[in-house]
Image: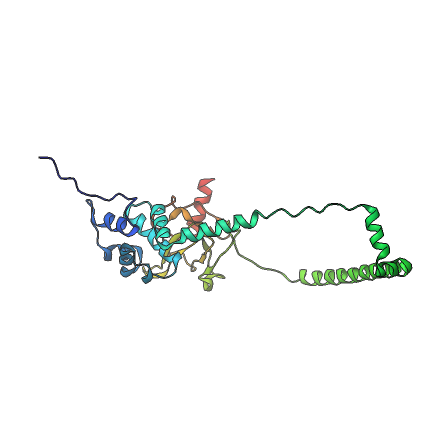
Length: 288
């Protein structure tokens, strides 16, 4: 007897939620949502909503994509594929295509009409027949004198304004400016943990989307959030904090203004990272 062939969907035919559910419930390593929710610090109902494709339960689009990316990496699924599928399911790709088409139309402006050059004689005849032009020609000395006076007054005003700016600049220069901000690789989008800005020695910046969790010495979570490129978090002072990065290669770690080597590879989850300023600076010396 011929074997019965089952109708099995491929990844290309499956939704993002179906792929995530299939990865979690099949194979040798079956897992439950509550267990994964605790490991990722993502609410169970959010993970369930991702598997069911019920995106209205989730917060903003950036969180939907962030949660989906971390969930996919935890299950060993290609996170970029999952994010692309969700974008298509939400219709984000269609919006991006319309925007791209609109920008292309704006750039390809219609050529300006070419105006034929008229002969000098015809223009001169028009000037001679123009009554206001006759008046200007008759009293041209007065007009030239007035124009020269305007230019002189404008020059004097410019000199006075420039002198005023220089005096103001000198006054401002005497005020010392203090800043302990690192020379970030990306423009800062949003700042978190600003209450630690003055005392903390370690600053994190996302260079690509990554979930970040910070725990204190007692294991209590003091920060948990998906950071998007440009987001900054000021780590509390003290050397006993530990971090978990959903995308270890997507987070820059700055210690006292110095960028230390990455704690892990791209799209790799890293846990138990000790945020000790002196120890992290030692890694810089070791890498040199």
